[in-house]
Image (cartoon, rainbow, N blue to C red; front, side, top):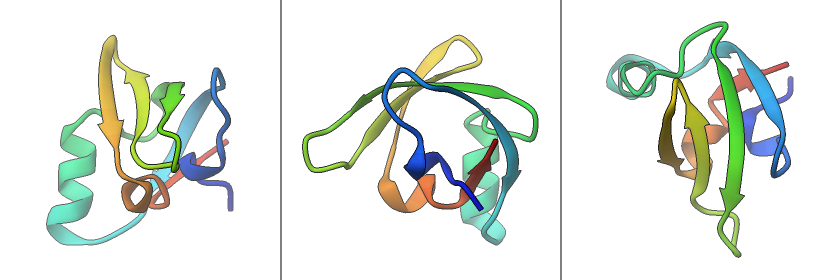
Length: 73
């Protein structure tokens, strides 16, 4: 399983599934990261946390722990 955490800078990937449960999964999906959406990896902080992405036309910063819950292709 490849996750958003594995994607490299300047990659465009597609979300396959959002793992996790309850409020955490709902929060990720409320930010626009749903099945089938394309995500562009803009930047990664020097220590790898956070990751800045562009999704649905806006910029979003995600923690490493959240990126590991987002399965991509």
